[in-house]
Length: 385
Image (tube, rainbow, N blue to C red; front, side):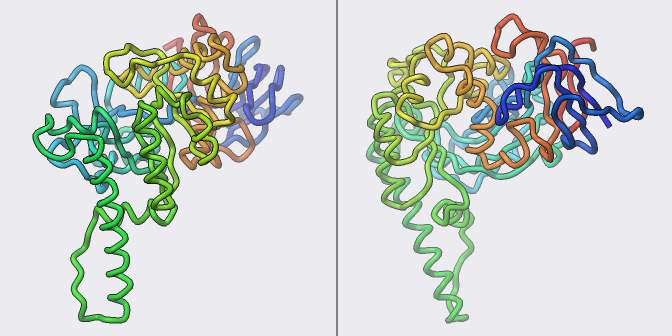
């Protein structure tokens, strides 16, 4: 058993508990509050004058798939030979020893979505992983989305030598993939009453049927307002759930996002305008999305920006007008909800996984250090080591 005593506990969902205690047993939080009796056998971490909060969650990365220093050998996040590859899964490609994972836990990030794609019209399944373990299987939590890309990246995957080389071509390929999946489903239904019907197994359509049947949402990489509206148009056409990723012009169509119940994983907020599509990057966008009642999470899109700066992204959003509560939620409970893992992570509550971070100052002050990162009740990082 592990006890964290006397800390300022940011529970996220139930406010701040000053001089609080957290009891952890078998990887789970068993008690949270003040004046909790600590069993004699418990290992004790004294968090006096420290801030204790749930492990941070980056809602969209290529960590372990796209390794920044390895060039082509570490560039396993995009399958450049096809535009539509929903059947790909990151568990088959990530390197659990990517050095960036150490950077992540040293800065309080304990879970992340890892998704292939960026250049593919449909890049594959995005899955949630804990940032501990020596195999991808140990890290894996669940599949959480199917990744789609629109705009500049998608139309350049083949250097404009074959489809898609336009936004129209990208939208066509996306629509065709869903129509093919619907036909595959129809063929499967017909086979139930006709055993002589021959059907070749279609792994692509099997994944897309999970989207059509609301088992997985689409996570759509899009920056420009017109691309965002194309994504909304297609999502409505096929009656599927959608989350917008990056969304540098999301503020321009915030009312449409709200009307269509589309959440935004915004970022990285701290970026260069290196593409035509990023020309309208605005650090005030998180505030504008909140004002439009659009659900908001933040991302570093590692390695677009190092995953270690996730708390800094939240701090910059606050500097530009976002309230502190929403900023903290945007790197904890909101990504947990969008990824379908809020029953396990994203807040400090009894029964949840003991993924906890201890800071020596307020978590969103850039001068604050992480003193300890705990995942599933085990200390995976300590500033003293």
